[in-house]
Structure formats: structure tokens, C-alpha cells
Amino acid sequence: MLAYLNGENGMARVQEVMDQALHGDCQVILSIINLGEIIYITERELGLAQAQAALAAIEQLPIEVLPATREAVLGAAHIKANHSVAYADAFAMAAAQEYNGVVLTGDPKFKVVEELVVVEWLSEC
Image (tube, rainbow, N blue to C red; front, top):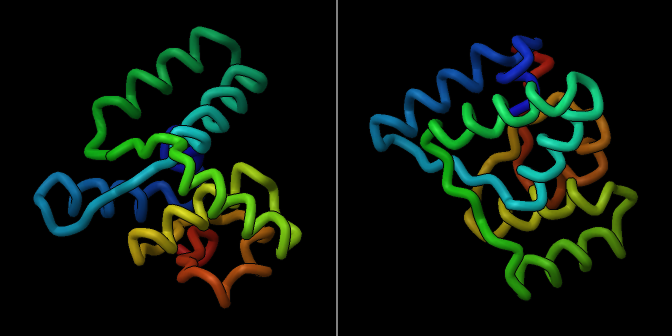
């Protein structure tokens, strides 16, 4: 989402996926934990007004925001306990596992979990 919102490498691919979701060809999911991560990074780097604008933009997209359920928390905890990843990233991985989905990312830290989830590398776009 940060690539999409900030016009970074991979933005076109994220837009393509959003268009597919809008037409019902796929489902886009985002953990509430990862939503919080997007907003705090945006606020830290660009300020509160930009973070609020980012949240408003995300809320207009065809994205299902997943709650931090007990199952999600325990799934992320299990991933974090066994892999050297950020806890917030573990929520994205747990969601991808639960929904049999693909993680779209340019973050090289996801290399260590390619055996757990399918990763599509935005940096290759």
C-alpha cells in the first residue's frame, strides 16, 4: 500500500490488482495491524494530514480490512516465534496463509518466509 500511495516502484501492479478487485476478479485483504502500520509510517514521514488523507484513500479502495482476531494474533505470533520477521509483517503472512493469498511487497525481509506464503515482488515490476 505504501508503494501505491507514494507512487513508488510497484504502484502500477498494485493499481492493477485494485482494478481486478473492483471487478470481482480477486479479493484484496489487509490486516488492521498492517493498516495501522501504513498510517503510522505515513504520519511519521509526511505528517498527520497526509496520514489522514492516506486512510481516506485506503477506505475508498476495494480492500477488506481484517480484524485482529484471536486466531490472527496467534497465527502471527507463531510466525514471529519461528521466523526473523517484524510482528506486523507476521500479520500479513498469517492473513495470506488463512486466505491462501499472495503477499505483494517490495520488502526484502519477506525473503525468509517464501516457504510459508506466496510472495509477489513489487520491486520486479
